[in-house]
Image (cartoon, rainbow, N blue to C red; front, top):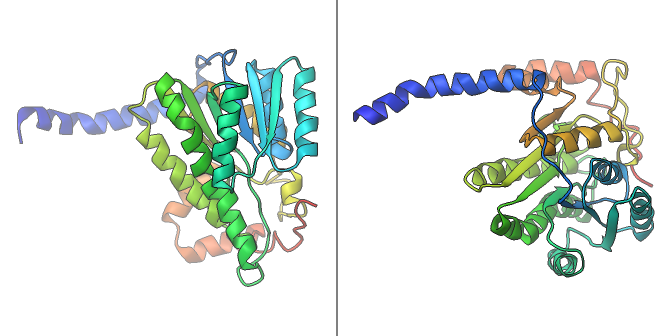
Amino acid sequence: MDLISACRMLLFPIQILYHVLRASVSPLLSRRRKDLNAEVVLITGGGRGIGRHLATEFAKQGAKKVILWGRTEKCLKETAEEISLMGTECHYFICDVANREEVYKQAKVVREKVGDVTILVNNAAVVHGKSLMDCDDDALLKSQHINTLGQFWTTKAFLPRMLELQHGHVVCINSILSQSPIPGAIDYCTSKASSLAFMESLTLGLLDCPGVGCTTVLPFHTNTEMFQGMRVRFPQLFPPLKPEVVAQKTVDAVRVDKAFLYLPWTMHALVALKSFMPQIALEEIHKFTGSYTCMNTFKGRT
């Protein structure tokens, strides 16, 4: 081993300690936020739920243009009108992210009619709320195509131009269920775990790409119609998140280039516990919190 390699080996643990300490104190320090005045934001699943609140929040925080993608024109139109009344230019397009060719076609239309997308928010998702044996094959495939593969197609459609411009951001609205799955949502948990792996790999792959970053948001149960009927055992201890709070925290994370955002912050403890606790202890935690049965009353989006 030469002298330079030996020095690097000695400095490595010091560097790691420095970054850990820096990350620990960063929430206590004010960080410079990037301006959104020149940003063109595209949000999949932008007509309702978290997507609608994200559109409103980006507009509120100064985005130049907001573009909505979704499958239900009524919801998209209502959201677009709301954003326009706020004084922000807003466009909507019917697009099913599960359809690769449709994604590429609509991405071309967006570039021609609106311009280059500089912030892509992969938010579209579905959940069927059934066990493996109760969920039909088409429903299982639909979850994987929308929740996971849809991100491949949208990112491939818009990321190359971001890299050319050396300016852009890819956002994924994931879920804490990607790291702590529950029964009764096997399709959703599996697709979100795949989505998380996709974003972790993409984030590392863009480390040497100046001006282009990623943000992955992992929220706890959020109070939207998508998870209507889901019940936790102790709602006072584990209250569902408000979608407007998730949206506000997400936009804040994008503006400070935060790579991973857990909501609420206590979800860090859940991930840490899972890393070293034996399976029997984790099972007892699931029984105590009622996550084994929380999907028994699930109704979902009507």
